[in-house]
Amino acid sequence: MRIRTTTAVITAVLAFTVVGCSSDDGSDSEAGPTRSSTSEGTSRADDSGTAQDTGLPPAPTGAERDAVLAAVRDVNGNLTHDEDKAIDAARNQCAALDGGAANTDHTAAQRFSYGGVTLTDDDGSHINIGLRKTLCPAP
Image (cartoon, rainbow, N blue to C red):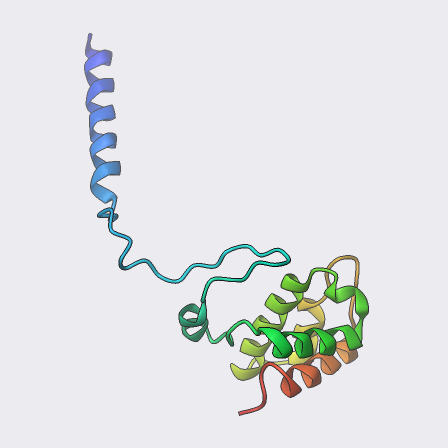
């Protein structure tokens, strides 16, 4: 009997804690910008507010997006098979460049080494040059 009472009390406390910790009032009016997954023919939700908070430039679109992808493709064409991944890596690299990160050539080489492609620091330097000409010009 004592075990059942203890179990019931613990269950009640846990249920109250879970419900009490929820900050969702059911209103979506204060929901921040979201980022949806993309596929060809769809677009991303506006994430410019989030981008400003983290130092990331806004996701490029149209001709600007094409220019960023071309700059990355110039270093290694295999890096743009997943265009969204390449754009995300470029935006993150811009945050590193504009944030004063050390050894940005190495950082770019590491950030863009994916999908079976391993880049050198020299490749990273070329990526940084391309990003400075497109997505994140020097301040």
